[in-house]
Image 1 (cartoon, protein in one colour):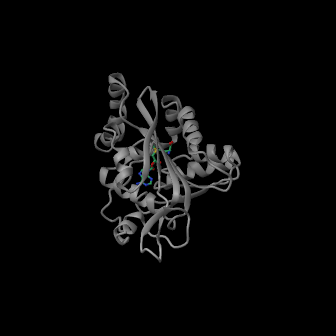
Image 2 (cartoon, rainbow, N blue to C red):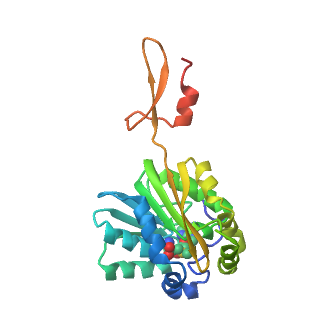
Length: 256
Ligand SMILES: C[S@@+](CC[C@H](N)C(=O)[O-])C[C@H]1O[C@@H](n2cnc3c(N)ncnc32)[C@H](O)[C@@H]1O
């Protein structure tokens, strides 16, 4: 994809010179351990799962995943090479093996259907609506049929106090990119990209506003089974060799 017209990304704390302070700020202001642990619980990883942490920043979540699930294969991607340097050093210090890659969310350096789980924390509020849409589609591409997306990010404020406190995040990270989160638009974002069972599952209030956990599933493909005798067509949702997307299958299925 041509990213030549794409504006530069918003760094972890808006300005590159603040990146070294990122971990201290996030740890003390966002109940980081609580919400990242909750997301890991929700994602229900298994041995051998291939996991992508999108917008991994300093790598805290990826490291936590690898420590709790040493038999998983963890990849972490971020568009900022400077934050990735910090992340690599942290992973080395923690003694865990994580594959870090530099890449932008709307043009990921991975093949189709590569991952069993994609996780992402405090990331989507860094993107314009257009980039959120492109990113959701790109995630759909790199996720296996039946795989799951688990996201934690700023969401619809739980009450007026939370809405007021969230202004501090908006002053730092920008009003345009954060407005979609605040208006609860991540659920329709993932639905429009083709994900199913999209839910806003958990609410965690912090001193800077309300964080919400989301989950979504990339649908399994379906097989059109045509019964030779009657010509009747049925759709079966399953793992199978010859598969076509559900929408195509519905359109292509002959009348019973
Ligand atoms: C607020 S930090 C979150 C880091 C980490 N996930 C966490 O929870 O601490 C957002 C990260 O997204 C990265 N980022 C912003 N826009 C990006 C994009 N379009 N593609 C990839 N990374 C991006 C930034 O470099 C930054 O490291």
